[in-house]
Amino acid sequence: MGAGAPGVLGPRPVAAPARREGGLGGRAVALQGFPLPRQPPRSSAGAAMEFAELIKTATVESVLLSGAGLPPVRGTLCITSHHLLLSSRPGGDGAPGSVELWLLIRNVDAVEKRVQNLGWYQPPRTNGSQRDTRLAGSSGTITLRCKDLKVLQLEIPGMEECLNVASSIEALSSVDSVMMLYPFFYRPPSLRLEAGWHLFPLERYYQQIAAQTSQWRLSSINRDFSACPTYPPAVIVPAAVDDEALRKAARFRQGGRFPVLSYYHRKNGTVMLRSSQPLTGPNRKRCREDELLLGTVLDEGERGFIIDTRSAQAAKQARMTGGGTEPKASYPRWKRLHRPLERGRPLQESFAKLVDACNDTALTMDRWLSRLESCRWLSHVKAALSTACLAAQCLDREEACVLVHGAEGTDTTLLVTALAQLILDPGCRTLAGFQGLLEREWIEAGHPFHLRCARSAYSHARLKQEAPLFLLFLDCVWQLSRQFPFSLEFGEQLLLTLFDNAYASSYGTFLGNNEKERCLCKVKESTHSLWAWLNEPGEKKKYLNPLYSHNALVIWPSVEPQSIQLWQGLFFRWIRSSEYLDEAWAEIQRLVENDDTSVEESAGNRQSQAPSDTAAQTENKR
Image 1 (cartoon, rainbow, N blue to C red):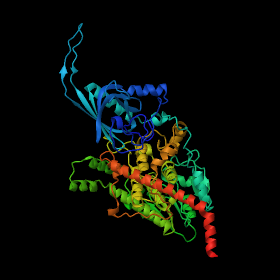
Image 2 (tube, rainbow, N blue to C red):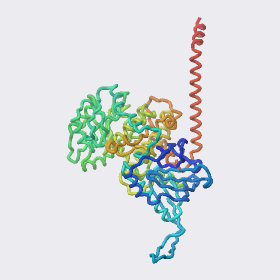
Image 3 (cartoon, rainbow, N blue to C red):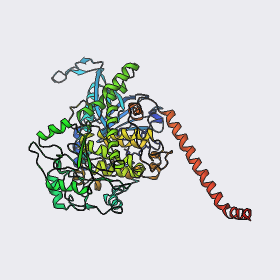
Image 4 (tube, helix red, strand yellow):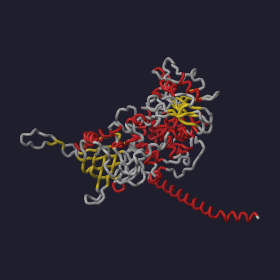
């Protein structure tokens, strides 16, 4: 299955660009256009045996597939280790060119089954056999609710087959071992295994900072992940603080996440740091090394801001269980600001309520607005953007350094630091710069993708550690792109692709919870990088914004309620056709390309005419 079509039913082969609607059958659509494998993926005997035990029924004939806005397709359903396939011959058995539809089973969020038309009968006994009671004339419907928010239905003849298929899909979609996931088996012929994994090294980012100042150094204190299990091997820290002091500071921070540099603001030399909460506890413990680290960041007479993404009450409660905040007496030059951002269960429930409301097409206007408000998703978007703007304002306008942290420092902390950089730095608003930002501030920084994206909006399973923090970030980026349509080099399709791949992917980029886990699982040696695929010349073009024009200024978004809008391109992606919008963007792309060609031709003509023009000007002066 192709890279970015994790939960997509689409034809094989796929050559069409990403779409959000379309029919199945002859014009079946692969939403992200990733090519499907031309040969069976690599496997091992042990893995094959384990998967085989989970598949109760591998093939079922005469299955009817349907979905919102899609014409029904009847065909043969096949279940493999990682995919659900349906092949059909629209013109009958003798018709050429069967259509194959693929769905990455990892993308299934919930399986709902309903059995119909039950009837019992007892076949005659033979040779003294025991009496057998069987179901006759039964059929069943399986509803697949996918992590990318798509909903599909399979009508399967036979109750036993229906129950077996449902059980197989549930078991395969719940495989929790990282090394059993599809990226470890996917081998596209067009990509090299090592491609894309080293496009955005932290060393390169550090060299950009080192060219501006000598106050920071690249430390390899965490090369064996002993200082902090969720940090990458190398981190950027104050040059005046040695590694021994860093180790002591790490023991004073939850999970070992001591303050490290997140962003250097070239305009005035201020910096943004991130960390986890200090372990002050009820006895208000101190750590001289931690105080030294933060004190070194500030020049004499300077003040800094600590943006705590918890409420003051939550931070106070955390102190009673061993956590806490930086005491004013120990950090006199740092002012603490509380900007509470939801994480965990409240955010996951908000996401689920919004998706449920979007799927209810029978709602009246009043009822729709009421449910949209009650889910509070747009309030979470507003709060995230507001906090990021506060961090950016401290850096750019107050010319003050900033430390961002919540409790663990792996969720709302990264949400704020990444958004603030997007607001401040035009380099992060290019396609390559944005990928580098994601690699540095989300993946290497230790956001637990495997835990947070284990389930999407439809799952009936009891919530554990799922939370759509990364989706909230993508939604905020979309808000920026809508308010500043010329300032981001990439478009909505990239954000949709990232959302899909964070929850279910053919690539290893979002696997695991941190760099240590990815190292232990040999992700970079055994899977392909999503960045390698997105930067293929033919693929890259799909994600570019044709209206992009470099903007060196800070982009300050409006966070007024009227300015925050529902991301329809995501939440209505499978509900409402975007055919006309897609056609409009295609026309914009064509006009921009034609205009660029005209400009180049005009520039060439002016260059060829330059000597004679110069002579004419000289003649006029005479």
